[in-house]
Length: 476
Image (cartoon, rainbow, N blue to C red; front, top):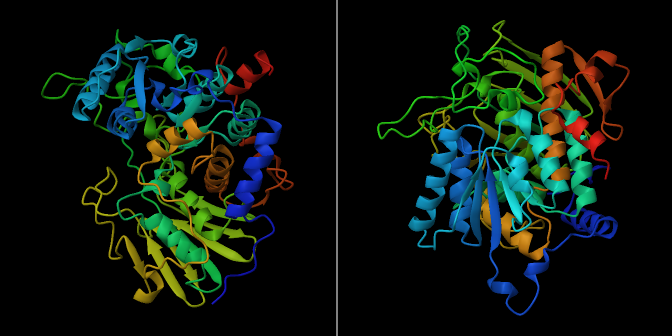
């Protein structure tokens, strides 16, 4: 059994090493001076958390604390109640991990946190529309970054951020944690099986993603005294405040801010594109990994989707997308498919999804009839240490990032790879919005002869915010 010949723009481990070497030659990976010297191995990385919401407190803060390689010395949030809660959460996590609780300073303005020379790295756990600007500011301040997915809200922002990472020599890991999913590591194993030829010639890939509900618009409300709503909106249009648009202002049974419920911004196209990037950033990344297309791109995209007319919860509902990739590989993305990724070849199929984990879109954690690692023939997923293609093992995405901050090696989900996965999501969304077939030039990163589609690759930024405005005002 053999896979198809490598695609012209496919991405192998050898390519990755070569790309990393070229990147290092152009912009050497910068090591903080205090990591050198006789005592360097004992020096812990000093981290600041920017964003103390649901993902920050439930995923990113535990990930950093449990890695036991860093001290969190600062937290930042535009909501003062969440800020206090975030600091308390970090202290709790360090005590639970039996670590000395560091002194943690709090900031309402991320610029003040970034100005601290003693902070080596930051975790950015913010809404999608804030990713690019804050990440570029952090790079300009000399910080390594763990950035929540998706990479950026718009394609144009992704191009800017990818370039900034390359110029900076900093380590940036995107939160595509399926690359470090444990303890079964099924996503890595599935991609190794497919890349090693277990399904024969790869013909088709199917991605199942959930959808978000909608509801009528809530009326305007007074802006809470604890929230800097103007800065929260950032580069997006000025619109009235209502809790439905931002994040919950309620409290839990202990009187702490509600950081467990899904925030309303996840359903508004000013701040996110919906599940096509929310879950799609994960599944497209895994699909590209298994296809050997981590730096590749689709050739054509044809999508359709249902979009509510509400102004607030207006992200897509049901949808269906067909993409073609080099090597005549066809991809289908639909909410009608079981949540996960299926690789289909001429000698069978392999399916992979998350294992027994309840999510807001799948409360039971079961997902469907196929198991978290399944195949048309059990032999296709039999373990082996002799696979032709094998990837690095990681059971902690945050630990992988922190280890790379120390070693200056490339992490498992670097900027170029994350941008390509996110770009596939974004061009799919554009096709859904336009409801027609589009042709994509992956090298030029433009649609072919389609001004309307190309106009949707970027958005106007509200002054004084925005990644493009920041880059123009602070030339490297």
